[in-house]
Structure formats: structure tokens, C-alpha cells
Amino acid sequence: MVLRKRGYELLVATDGEEALAVAVEGRPDLIVMDIQLPKMDGLEVTRKLRLTPQFRQTPILALTASAMEGDREEIIAAGCDEYISKPVNTRRFPQLVAEMLRRGRGIPSLSGGDGGKENTGN
Image (spheres, rainbow, N blue to C red):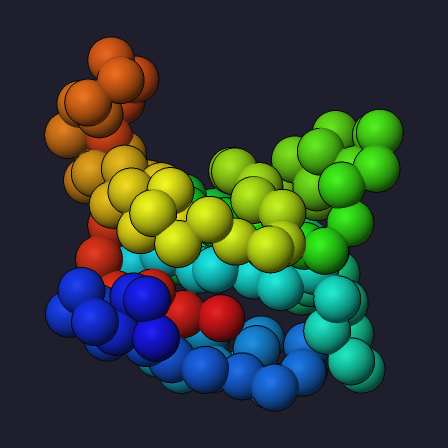
């Protein structure tokens, strides 16, 4: 709802297998990947996507309820670019999505990093 209110077009999946299929078919510019998905977890989906040439550069934002020590490293090692834990800060989340989309387009971020893409998907 937070992203839809800001005009983003969303592709939605309810499990890991569907997330993989939706991503391949919809080719989103940014993927918001829930790590705790049924059938295939989000880290496995991310690994599979990263093996596909069309998704090697697609920004992937991990969304997880787990914020244990070492989780960030595991999430980044699986191929996610950023990570945000639940409960999601509804002010920070859209800012992070926008920044990742700018990075994907090569536009400098407001914080001085390099720029993300458009359309979000899960």
C-alpha cells in the first residue's frame, strides 16, 4: 500500500516459485524480496535470479522479519543489494526504494552514492 500510494506499479507473488515466475515474466526494475517465502525462500529465489543475465544488475531489496547478527551478510551474499527489517518504517521504505531505483539508472543518490530503477516487484 505504501508504494502503490506513491504511484509505483507492483507485481506480487505469494511464494518463492511464483516470485521467480513473476519476475521473469514481468521483468521489474526493482525487486522487493521477502526472505520468508513458502515453497522457496527469498534467498534461493535471489540466487536463481542472479544466475539469469537479465537480473544480474536488477536492484533487489530484501525484506525480512529476522534481524539477527549475520543475517545482513547472508542476505548480501545471496545477491540482495540492500536489506530492511520488519516492521517496516513506512517513511524510510519508500525513500530506500526511490534511492535504489535511482542507483539502477545510474543517477547519483541524495546521500552521495550512485543511483536504482522503476517498477517494483516481489
